[in-house]
Image (cartoon, rainbow, N blue to C red; front, side):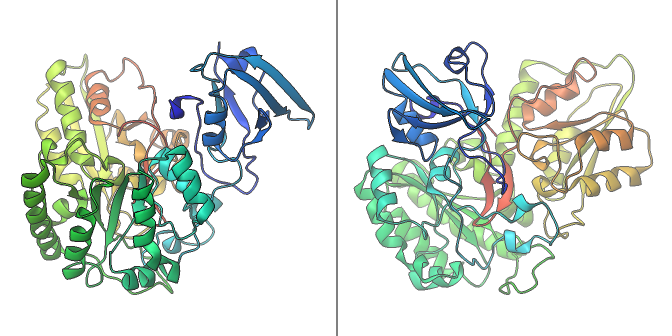
Length: 480
């Protein structure tokens, strides 16, 4: 299997990143047997140069291998060996792409990177639009920077499915929204993907008065006609920070506008479900929260095809919680326990109902919806909370606590560092109590049920942050 041929880690891009560099070798693996160590770089396999983990994966499918390695000191070594066809290398790399992440040259009206204040860490200003990361991680791409060779490679390796930022099927409007005339070439590009047998998930970042209403009707209708290559369509609302100087003027949805979008999309879902048995088009959670409308039931998400795009994330969280609750009732703590549960303001009503159902004597849970003062109160998702905002909100409570639980999505992917570079250890020192990140409903339930027994081991990375062309971008492997 392509994705199992080697382990990889997609971290945040930096100027001094050494692409193709091994950062970790799994104990007992083929890589360890070959003497590979962190700092080594794999340059070629059987004489083939490597652009990314995709090239490496296919090249390592051979059973007779010659591996050209560059060690940290600059010396090179050719390692020749035999391996089983499906034997994994067992090395993790600093990046999944060895020749540099392909950047985005668009000037999207809603680009989040353009709404980040100056003098923050460099990685927050990186715009990726790389079809390889789309295949490997589910990152959304516009395809405006892709050429003939890219489409040939997608067809050759059958890189399917991809995740495509559509935004509108009006090509003149799309070119304007993306800030490049190349944005108007989408229809031909989608035709090429279909001709190569490549499926794709699509997304629309919905902007009031621009690509909603009749434009959204056309987008849904034309994408639905491209099934089965178009596997699903996610519609997420535009998000705006307070740092929009020089950006295209945009507005956000209010409750009435969100209700209208729900009504419009529900009609398409009913029609498509009668036709194919699936809804095809799905709304981001924010629409339901903003409108005050109950979240759809789990079965209405048809397996959550766009979970990593914030579509069904809360419903999946609640289902995860309920499964854990049904399998292991929460026990009474040995001594009274006071825990604060941090979340963004958007999800507070859902979390409030969930925690109110906990009836365990001696366990006091206090929900703390944190206002995003850094990016502005219109940014209300949990994954964009900064360490300073969380810490200030906790300090303002003034009441004693035994611990804090907060969404792991607020941390940098795979690290205990918040978006504003505050370390988790620094927050714990400032509070004087443990601060525990939780990623899923099951993790939240299990931490509450077994507080003090052990600190949960983070086996999965935080997956969600805002990025250039999407409301959410997937940063690492794992379930949501």
